[in-house]
Every structure is written in structure tokens, then in C-alpha cells.
Length: 128
Image 1: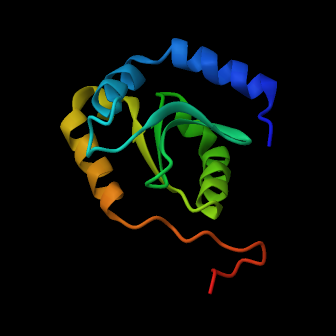
Image 2: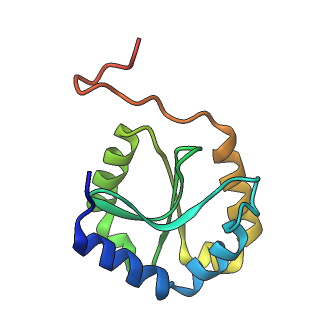
């Protein structure tokens, strides 16, 4: 499956221009530094771009900006879609990353220890 060219350009731009919180968290996650897991940033899981992902652990990490509270419905749709693919989604506010990186990393470590969500069949039933 080919990725949408606009998504690729947007993800590339976002990788080149991270927010301060994304930059700080990326320094802790990159190069298998954290829990010996490979993370990628600004990763396309079509039709979305997620902030960080460990595909092997089926974990998505989202960093929400200060004005992000107005997007609750959109975030819920994103989360529901990603969970339907078997991903666990954890969210942190920018200020959490900036002020409490150890706590954020502790929560990510906890999420990594929880088994990935089962991927559901199109009919909504788990694999047997």
C-alpha cells in the first residue's frame, strides 16, 4: 500500500520541526535507548500521523499541546481507529513532558509491559 504523498510531506516536516516537548521525549526514546525498544517519530499509520510509535510493542505515544483540549472528539476517533489496529495509545500533555519527564517515562514503561490490544476482525470479533 502506497502512502499518501501529502502525509509523507507533512510527517517529514513535523520530524524536522518538533515541539520542545517532542524533542525532549525523542532524546529519551531514540536509538533503542528506552526499554531496548525501537521507536519512530511522526510515523504514518494512515490516515494519521502519530507522534511516536513502537510498532513491535503496538504502542502509540501522543504529546498534546496546550490548545489540544478542544480536539477531544477528534482524539477519541483517532484513538478508536488506532486501537482497532491493535495499538495501545497513551497521551501526555506538553507540560507533563517538560516538567515530569521521569513520570512520563515511567508511564510509557508501564504501557510497554501491558500486552498489545488484540486486533479485531472487521466484524468486531477477536481472532479465534
